[in-house]
Image 1 (cartoon, rainbow, N blue to C red):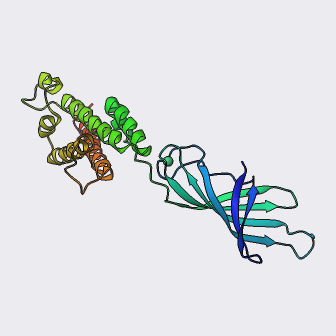
Image 2 (cartoon, rainbow, N blue to C red):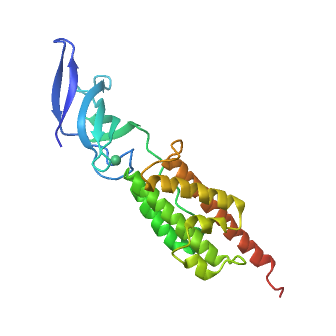
Length: 249
Ligand SMILES: [Zn+2]
């Protein structure tokens, strides 16, 4: 694709534009992590180095150019700055390119839940995946609602799989039983605290008036990670318990 690159012309003291076709634009967005060509907005040549080998070849062997390219993303409508180095070998005509720096830095993709959680709680995992997809596309309202829903499924299935005295299956599965009431029944204080925090922040993403201004979707995701790891520890512990309590042969 042809792009117009700005370059300062020192002798005439003005900016020149040069149309070039050899730059490969970045293909992943550092804001939303979506894959897809980042659209060219503007760019400038910031370094132009040539290297020759003892005059053996009349022409420089390598032409190394550095560009500052600003791109934007179709998915999240955000801009990024990229320093791209392009090296051209004038002898074999091959070129290589590397992206040396991108601003903002690539966001860490959310940690996938551990395999045993995915296996044990597939409904939770499916909703979690959709919420994460929404979050990575910059759709934070949808993501917040999705994460809240994912925790509702995880809490409900956890209560069904780990029967607690006095908590009836009919009550757990009754649509009138609120998430908060179910969280209150969880058998570990840390799960109750984390579950409530997730429900509060999830509600904030869902409701018209935001109550907890000082917390963000990233806090919500951190609390979910902790909630999951508490349950995961439990699953691992149960496996050890099964082994120890196995009838001796
Ligand atoms: Zn994006």
